[in-house]
Length: 238
Image (cartoon, rainbow, N blue to C red; front, side):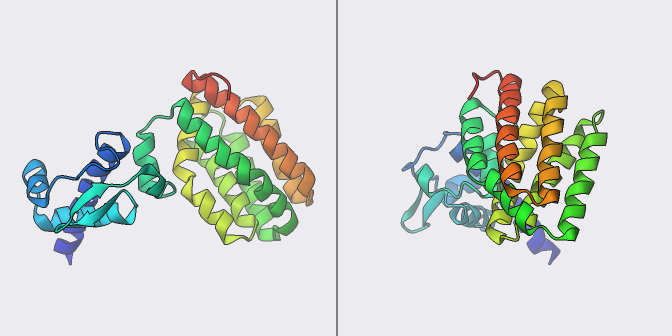
């Protein structure tokens, strides 16, 4: 069993290495992937490991084909953009203006509505969790890691409070991007008083069951946080 787990771990590492090449543009859509033999020689691993890695890339929509027909890189429209690994490989520890645009477009599409639904559907347990994370966010000003973790947890708690499993899955899918964007924005100037007050307003509206206010204030928060992120990455305001 340990041997199998070890092989899977190496396969995962090789998949990450190849995946970063693809999402980074080194391998373009339509390009043939190297043969198994070439990958084994280049990476110094077994055919079993290469096959495990390619199976992972297949599952993420990055490649298609097989050993007999040859494997090719798929167009970006076929990639599973919500896959945690694909998103992490795209980010690569940094966030540029284009990725920020794409992230905030999807956030504007569903986060305000999520807040409205949370205001209408949150149970007492959901409300207690949201309040707890808001308190943690408010008291973590001097600790970047704590602040980012509390901010992410607060947003995920709101998604859970909607009672909609699709909302929860969307939140989990963009968690990596949220963590990175919050870390960049908070490290630039911390969570300023205005944004903190808007966070608190969103939470208060949800706890009070005011769906209209919760939705409106989340839109305000997204605009404010985007401006902070733009300043952090040196981008023109989106």
